[in-house]
Amino acid sequence: MSSVDSPDLWVALRPAAAFRRLAREGSGGGRWIAVRRPLFLVLVLASFGSLATSGRLSPRLLIGCAECAVFLPLLLVAALALVRDRKFPFTLAIDLFFTGHVPWSLWIIALASVWAFTPPVQAYQWLAYRWVWYCAAGAAFVWSCYIDFWFLRRVFDRTPLQAVRDLVVLRSVAWTIGMAVFVGAAGWQVIATRFGL
Image (cartoon, rainbow, N blue to C red; front, side):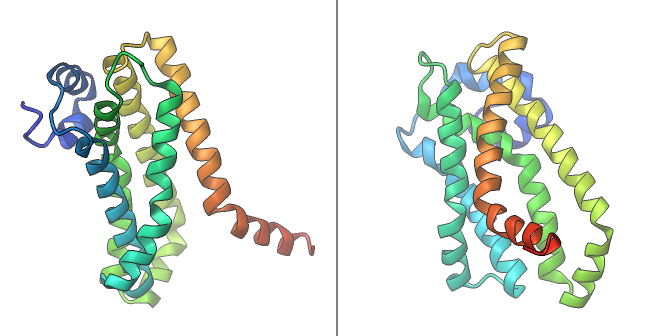
């Protein structure tokens, strides 16, 4: 398997072997490799926002959603910088780290498909089965943690214990700040309403 073939699926299915080989092979392309997969993530998130809002891909909504979604890859890169291996090229580390976003991308695409290809009334009825989406999100979370663990082991050459520690740091920083930004305002409104504040 060459890094020019589709490494994302390879990483998702066999992260230990994939990251070992991809880290050894390296990649050319300069700074472009540091932004190509984060930009793809922005496109996936913006497409979800457009599909969930209007049921179609609207350029106006894509741009607006992309402006909001760009925060997430920047946050992930900042969290990665906290645990980075200074001997490994950071641009390549960013590129390889974002190959592990396949589980979340699949979950987002599945959720977007519900909103894009079903009438809103049907989509809301399906939301009554939230446990399905929560289980799928839980599976994506565990799968992505597994991938990131092997990223830290193979790319940054961490011991298993160091990889777990760095994974906790990555997740804690990214998820805490991400949830505070994206859910904080709405969460506060729900809490205030529930307690009559």
